[in-house]
Image 1 (cartoon, rainbow over the protein chains, first blue to last red):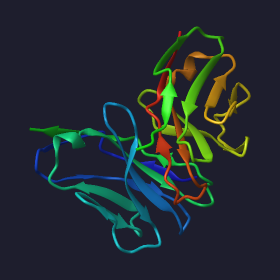
Image 2: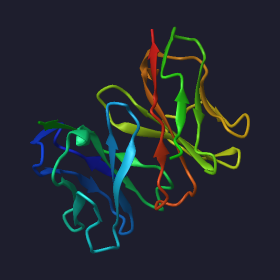
Image 3: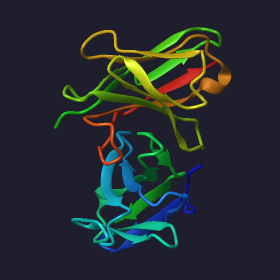
Length: 115
Length: 115
């Protein structure tokens, strides 16, 4: 079975600084997809960024980028120029065709942005 | 931007009672999901639903759970006889496709408290 692990329950960053959230996963599959979801205090989980495992290039969405290391099964999220609105719980998630449409989530990392 | 909505935001019930959690998926989406998150634990997949039938369910989704799309807009999760361990945040999600690449859009959740 696939598992996703986020070893940092909490992280903090100064406004305008850069922070990296870690995620590792375990799978025997070669084709899969990885996601970072953000859950602000209002509770709506929002997709931040997605990475297809077959793509070597790391995904980027504005200030958000990932460092995808397939061999190491690592998928970290980098937030540059952190803003107060980035404060949220961040979930790493995994999905593959063989696992159907179900998302497998990590424990989450609570990010605090300090002014 | 269209959103998934869920009602109620908080439901308190007595053990053994039936509860129905309601969700309104994004209007043109065809695939629907329920996830839950017990306090302090990971978000877990419960069930996916398409074309008026369950596509996939997890081992958590036992006979006390059922899902229904009673009309063209609502998607419900019924828990027949609630137990203390059913206390959790329940998230509904929807997507316009069933593939791993199709983004699942989440609602804000319903916090279920079983006393």
